Length: 295
Image (cartoon, rainbow, N blue to C red):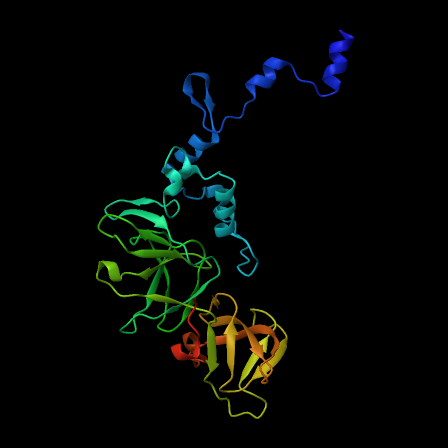
């Protein structure tokens, strides 16, 4: 009657509906088709890696590594709220490391602590070997590009280490703008490929012979953008984001540069390597002793 309508208008709910909406995170009742979030997350983890659907394969993502937060802090936040899907059941809270993956013929991985998205790494491998960046986590996936000796790469997400199997101890890491690289293979008889650095620094090695300067710093990626500064041979700059390769093979790099007195004068883009078009290399990475190791 009118009284029931008035009660509903004030937000009162019938008792039977209130009892049904219990939102049990651990529920798993196939007969009644009730599934809690914990079990659903376990199923999703077993399905990983999930390829991006063809309908959204063309979409790109905006990544801001300098902004606080990201995957690592989100993981910690979930941990503090008790929402970690791998913590269900007694005793699981004592496990170290985070969720990983199982790779056929290699073993199981766990997420490593101590580094985070946006961290810079240098190719420190012996024998001046290139570090291969592959499309997927698997070592058999397509090669995307290579990191030359002494050059830098930026971490794109949590590093993973194999904790059992034939590859036990091998460390793999996602990098920006995309791809995966091996950090350390010493546990399986290989070399250490990458080491953390605080600042990826480069030195101008090209001399134009002009009194005006040797390297033009432009506002943007394109060579048609306005000039913002000129650098002299011997000057050092800091790389602030991954390099970009233009269609003609020219390697462009975003940098921050000083004013010659230790201060920051500005930011811009420079050409790092023009050898693809018969030109010179304009920069080289600073020697390891010039860059303070992280940690």
